[in-house]
Image 1 (cartoon, rainbow, N blue to C red):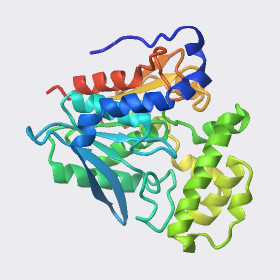
Image 2: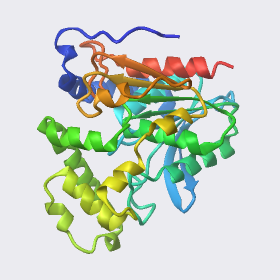
Image 3: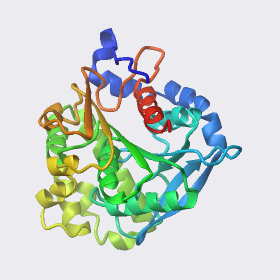
Length: 326
């Protein structure tokens, strides 16, 4: 297995630069080239998540069916085409796995599929959609990998799946305490909360265009920060009685982590400006949980050098290769 440590040098140790470099257009062009085979053998898959429909993109090795299936989950306001997800998908596909890049509700081009809005406690529908994909594909083995909020979803989905073929969960920079992450966004550098506020409002605009009945007024457009907008959203679009209850609804408690049914590998950066490292360091050692802490990397950055090589996609694929080898 690839155990090469993530050791960026000089300016690459800056967590904010890590986040910027990981999203540069030259990196996208390179990753899309590397993902050519994955994309060439890709087809859309409309999956049933109970009362919801979720859009996934499935890449299979048609000449050699019966490959293990890797399911990848993006972060909040990301999509199946987010660079970190596409890069990991390309590496996993080249490693011989079939790959499903699943869009959470109202992410990617899926705002029209369901009237009700996405929220972060909708792990049941994600688990059902993945179960639907497994039932259709019938893979010999399955692994889940997620980034940021997607890593949080991956662990909660693993608790729900009841799938004997599930072998491994890998989570990169996953949210463990949503309340702490919201505080970090509100009190940290402006660029992060501005980014997520802009992305969220753009997503809500897309939702309003296809399901205007969900937005009886446009007060939400004038809300200036993430905490107030989240509280407004909770009150009008969820059944949770308060913001605190909603955030607790997708908190990864120690009891939940102790109940994980398969080996779970969590990769976090000590300098992540979005996911406070203290939240993960406070989790006691658990038999099924391996915590890998890198000193640098920012939030889902992990750019190794000025050639913009990514470390996380290589590390995740190495872990999946080991877990799915049999």
